[in-house]
Length: 143
Image (cartoon, rainbow, N blue to C red; front, side, top):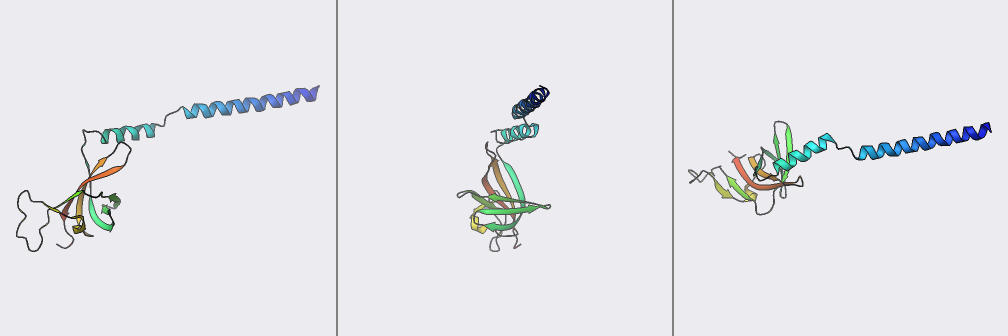
């Protein structure tokens, strides 16, 4: 009889352990991660219509197809520039005496060179992806 009581006690302990483990998993799955909640709020705010764009600034360190890598103050960011995105320049070419009008002119993507300093206007989409809206060449590597 003593062995049966001991076996029942062991089985009861194992069952209690399993129930506790299952309840712990269920409890944790219903908890919200405060960091994730904060990030979701930030993405929702930055992708709203109230904030039309975010600007990435830096020197072009590489161009790979439509991807431009910018570096500034030890930070690096690669931005994918979609086809059809307008590119503007505030840089005079050697044959221009001045840039007329607002000081900028529309140029082509191929005019961007390694070493140029750029502003890339981006829109943060609701899914967290960045979408390029325009590129502005602020200074040229050849000047």
